[in-house]
View 1 (cartoon, rainbow over the protein chains, first blue to last red):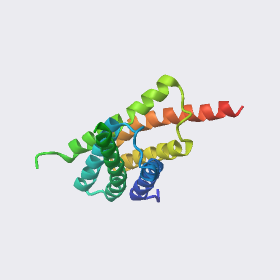
View 2: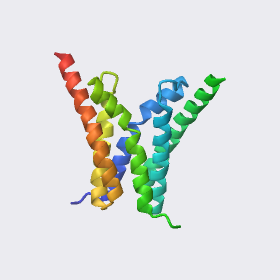
View 3: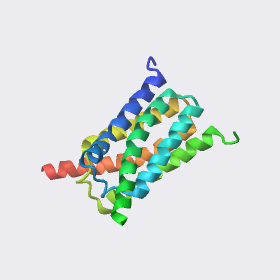
Length: 90
Length: 90
């Protein structure tokens, strides 16, 4: 086949990253994270960080690229969620 | 370091897969997919399928393992969503 694995990797990265964007956009726009699960976002963000570390260790650009973007989005949502949880607890 | 990249990969796979389980469980249990976005799930499922293909092409077990499980979960949710959309349209 003429299609490079790297191209498939970037296509995959593009799809999974853009499918995550609407949630990130909504959370950043409304600054509301009440209906999001803290447990789920903590686990997901940790998972994305580990994928990023894995991509760096095996020197795979598509994995690093996808997970840097997703980590920034996911960590931003998680910080909003933690801030929201802490301020409500007061 | 004593930690193998493969171990990091499986840890990453574990975290991102289990963070996806609550949604899959809820959808399968309630058989309700009304509040899910068809566009988001289509794109995400395609992305996971491409990651799976990428994992097979670069022969990376952690990527294949993670994406086989996530693809089954995501495709199941997507099928419920499509079925729901079609039956409502009648």
